[in-house]
Figure (cartoon, rainbow, N blue to C red):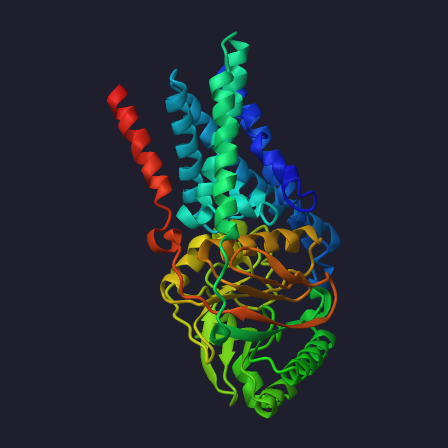
Length: 485
C-alpha cells in the first residue's frame, strides 16, 4: 500500500493491498493481529510519509547536525505510528465484531475504517487517507467523492479488498468463491463506469466566468529564505514576476505561502519595491506573508486590490504540528525545538473566515490545509467560486509536492471547482474541476505562468450534504450489532 503514493505512484496496488491484513485478522488471534496490523500500518504510513525526513538537515536554523537527525527521525516515527494506531484499532474492532455472515462482516469493516478516518481527519495529523492513493491518476474513481467526499472512495477501496479477502477465505474453506468474485469485479467495473460518466460530463465554462490568473513560483530555498540573502532574492523575484505577469494581461496574481517572509503591514509602511509595483501596475494580488494578531504571528494570504489596499486577510487554520506549533508543548517542548522560523508561536486562523476578492469569491487553502476536505467544502458552501492554494513545499524531496498535488486534485473534484496553486519550489499547477492538470511547474525552478481558470457556482452532493455515507454506514452497523445482542 505504501507504493501507491509518490514517488512510486502504483495506485492500482490499493485495490488488493489491504486484503492480506483482512485474511490474517480472520484467521488469527488478538496478539498476532495487533502485531500484523502494526507492521501493515508502519509499512503504509511510514513509506508514504518518508519524505518528512527531508526536514534534515536543519543546520541552517542553528540546529546541530546530530540533533537535526534526531528531530527528523522523531517526527517521522511519531506520524508513522499515529497512522499505524488507526490500523491497529480497526483490526481490533473488526476482529471483535466479526460476524459469520460475510455481508455483515463487510459492512462492519467498511464502516469502521471510514469512521476511524473521519475521526482522524478531525485532528491535526492527517494526510494518508486510503482515498488519496488514487490521486492524481485514477480520476474516474475520484469523481465518486462528489457524492460523499473522500470517504466514498475509501469505502469502495475497503469493500473491494474485503471481497477479495473473503473470496480467498471461501477458497481456503473449500467453498465456491464465484459469487464473491463476480461481485468484486462487478462493483469495481460499475464504480469506475459511474466515475467515467461523471468525468465525461462537459463543463460549462462561460466567457464571463473566465479569470486570467498569474502564478509566481519564487524558488527561494528554505536555507536562505529567512536571511538577508533570501529576503533580497524574494523581493526581487516577486517584484519582477508581478510586473511581467501584469504585462501579460492577467487579472489577478497568486504568490506562494509566505512568499515575502515579513509582516505585510510593515512592507506596506516601508513602501518597498513589490508594493510600488502593485501601485504602478494596478493588478490585484493574493500575497503570502505574515500577519500580526496581538503578540502572535499568523501565516496569512492577503487580498490586495488594484489601489494597493488590503481588502482582507486569510489566516491559515490548519497549522503543521511540530512544524508551526508543538502539540502537548509542556511535554514535547522539553525535547524538541519548534521548527517554525518565527520567534513566537504561529496563531491558527478561525475556521469561519469569509474572504472576498475583486474578481469573485475564492476558496483558500494554505499548504497543509489541502489534506482537509471539509475545510474546502465549508468555503464552497459559503459561495466560493474557485480554489486558490498557496504553499511552500521547500526542503523536501519531490515526492512531497507530488503528494500535495494529489491532494489538490481531490479538492478540485469534490467541490467541482477550478484550482490554481502557487508554491515556492514546486509543484505549482492549474487544475480544472474534473481534476485534469492543465499545467504543472518544474521542481526547484523559478517560474511564471499565466492561465485561465473559471468561476463556478455549482454544488455537488458532497458540498450540500457533507459526508453522509460514514454516519449512514455506522448507524446500519450499530443497528445490526444491537439486534444481535
